[in-house]
Length: 555
Image (cartoon, helix red, strand yellow):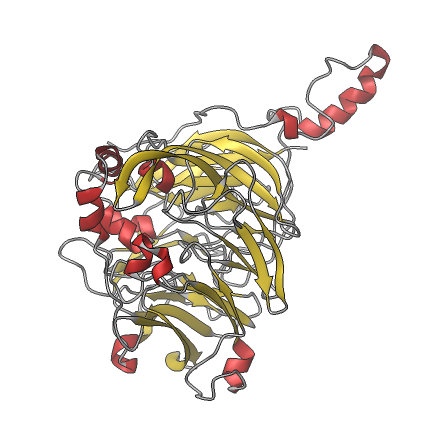
């Protein structure tokens, strides 16, 4: 069975109490003002689309990405910075909800004309679709394809010619715009158990190549036209670094989780599935690298992975030289674990990375010092940083995490300012006054805020010129527990828009589940909420709805 997403909607998505002063009703307008009010309402609400308008978001993109497409891959851009260079709207209305029942782990992307949305999903049906092309207008399915379940960890990247690229098990695959096969290149080693052993996402380089890193720590550059391998670099073999310790969450979660949680995992990933994926998602899967490569406009590559021993990791800089070839640069020592994807500013000057994702930190956040590290690439390249060794780079700042390591990559704007959120599985450990969101950079902390109404941030952040977007979730606490960690009872989630300058919540609208992954922005300013529903899965009294929801801007 191949699920075909439709234009079905679930619930309302616009909070009238938070709407601008001009509404979409004339109930209280005096007769002599009807004409003027109609003009204003028409401008605010549009005539044909339920009050939605277009708020263009068409930033410049580096080749070979399509111009004017704001969200082009995992973490928004080749540098994985989660920053989109446009102004976003302050209010939104739900337009459609598609792919109900299918979990979305990575962000959706777009065709060069913006009319098609590409998204990968889990699917409990072994023969079910996992790569989908949807109409941006109404969410209906244009085509879908069946791939190995590991494709759920890859976003679909699209070049300016409209060709699609994705990572599947031990291959990088390219498709034509109609979903037909173009080429496939085997890289890495297929795991007999079907685990995450091959490439983990991809980005394009300034030279127009496909760059990826495998779970085993081998970096590849591939030609976009035919997929031939142009260069590779085996990080463990060249550096002597080894993988971090694994938590084996595929075993632990299913053995100790409540029946309701196991039932959700079965429904989403198939019978017996989901646990190993959650381990990799939290940075404790045991592979050398569990995160997407970061690509700098300076022809530098950044990879998070293992380190000198199983208890230490590193973020490694590699340089693309003519040929092309790949050469070793410096590295930043980390606590053992894959932490987060490196985030690189669009000019390549700054990089940040989350640290502290050890197996023990998941169950006991206080057992490690979790931080987000900011790095000045120029200082490290010139060896003028605080570490004299030319192959070791010292951060210029570290942001201490109060609730344990980040479960997603921190965002990074063009000035090197980091935006992050605090979260934990220990639901009762922090009160409502605890900091939820924070912005800090080379000049120090800019702001810290606690979200209202017992809300917790529950998605990777997307940062625009004026806002931060994602999801927030409010949970109750159940009596079910692992050791002293209590599972959520009910999870209630919302699309959230936050003022980038202050951290204050300016808009929210109900969504069926938390994103856990990323809320993206389209060329017309619409927001797309792809739902993994991690908190919904863990909540024993909530059944995940999943899928992807489009919200269009309103005035």
